[in-house]
Length: 290
Ligand code: AMP
Ligand code: ZN
Ligand code: FE
Ligand code: FE
Image (cartoon, rainbow, N blue to C red):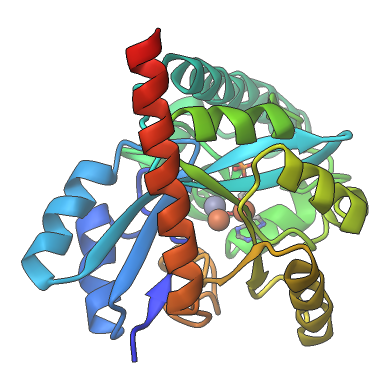
């Protein structure tokens, strides 16, 4: 049986495995195909592709883009786009800038609350990440003894509604779906019915987003209770959207999200692959015409 996991994070965002370690662990977990999908960044692709070639594992190049739809945060998985596409590159740069802008504002709030953390302390734990995320701030707080783990840092300080939460720039969802397609890739909405995005993603929204070029939805994910998965799978079938299942692995950064804990059917990956191959042909033709 072919085992496919299409959503994982490395140290290039907020995971704890380097891209090469992640690939080795994926092979060790018996996976045949793994997608590296760091938040808003593609800097891990080369190292992951190289490592995958050593262990006979297929590496799908992806990323998870921070988007917004009707005011709610939505995470968009993008597979095999050309990161050099000017429009995509510019928009991802804006998102990364938003992450960097947020850091000092979050630290100011923590300071006010009596939990001082310096930017240097955060950078010491974020290492080779393309930009900082809240999990890095959480790790720095663990290091300082303020909290015991990332979960406590989010629960007490960093999630929306908590006193050190700060919003940041996110890309418009429909625009980003189009940009990824123009860049020769395909898109799948990550954990669509997790807390943040459920209210803006009903059947009508999915239908409209499919019209904008969306290929699929991630159904099997730890953030979705089993009965929600049944409902979402039915909806995806009705709308002829690709259905995926994935771990959202973050190394030791997220407990219970182990590699391969959810997987994607090979037929569904084939559909995504046809989609990105077609998108790449269209992008090449656009390029010739331009
Ligand atoms: P950011 O990318 O900076 O907005 O931070 C959001 C990321 O933090 C999410 O994509 C998750 O990977 C991670 N995250 C969210 N909640 C938690 C939590 N309770 N514990 C650990 N990581 C979390
Ligand atoms: Zn993450
Ligand atoms: Fe996500
Ligand atoms: Fe993720």
